[in-house]
Length: 83
Image 1 (cartoon, rainbow, N blue to C red):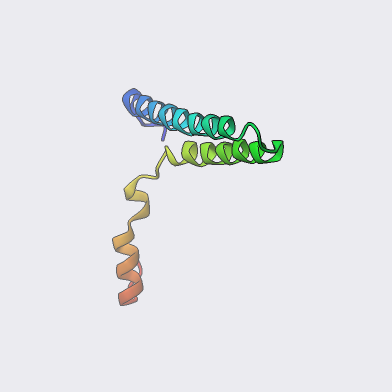
Image 2: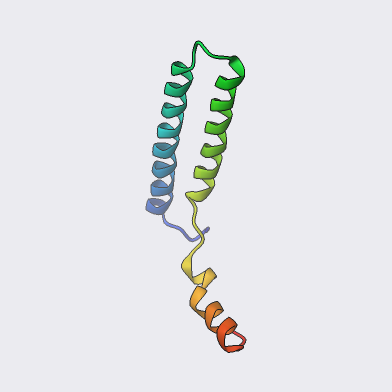
């Protein structure tokens, strides 16, 4: 993670900014459409948007494929070999 280049960090930040803009825009539209309903329902919309924002932000940084190595794990499970 510390060895990433500036362009990789920029890509992560731009991706997170675009996702959060979409999520918060959708929440604003939903809250606006529900303006005549109960405050609890509107708060639920904003809470759900905050939860989606947190998941989207943490999903922006994906683990590298070399750390997971699913083919090696699958082979070890099916053949009984150790890695």
